[in-house]
Amino acid sequence: MTTTYGAAPAAGSAALWAVSDCWTMTRRELAHWARQPVQVVVGLVFPVMLLVMFSYLIGGGRAIDGDFTAYLVPGMLTMTMAFGLESTMTAVTQDLGKGVIDRFRSMPMHSGAVLVGRSIADMLQSVLGLAVMVAVGYAIGWRWHGGVAAFLAAMGLLLLLRFAMLWIGIYLAMVAGKPELVQTVQILVWPISFLSNAIASPESMPSWLGAVVEWNPMSATATAVRELFGNPVAAGDSWASAHAELLALLWPLGLIAVFFPLAVKRFRDLSG
Image: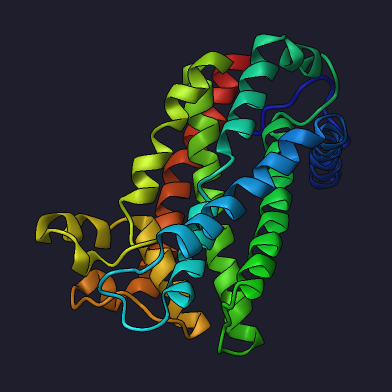
């Protein structure tokens, strides 16, 4: 049974009511962009800085068969999907800590609208971030060689990974409970991101570490989008490397199947 705040809508209008409430919460989150433009700009500029740094200052890419920039850009697009989660996580904990949820609960509002609105706003910002990164990648010499369908499929896999990471972040934010603890949780993103093939081939790593890297969900997405873009891929003959596109679907869907219901249950327990 669907949990709701306030009075229930007339029979037959529940779906429209839920969509309307979710859109209202989405507009609330988008309005924060206008009040916090620096945070939005920093979120867009930070991955660009990493891309330029790895491309021009570090570069090289051991064990990469082909142009390193062509290998790096898809990897950085993948890493970008893990960045910026702290803003969503902080917003969730602030809403819980300031009693905003209690005020929403007194209104005739669908219970899931708050989380759905936050997730939609985050995904819109992720689309904007991808557009910026693609433009910068093109400017530094990266090119994709597939058709429009392959390009859109690659974007879809990247956004699917972001959606999975988002619900992990929302759940962990509610477990942390306080904004000041979010930074501690966010630190976990860095080892997950860098223990992938986003910027280096597993072939350049010790064998045990390379095996771990190849099974990283971010490695699966990075390899899959490289294949779709027609860019160089990391050398490797493991099952994970050979079935990267399948894993790029299964990993995020599995994570969503676990953390989405956990986040919803946690939210209902906290606001019930």
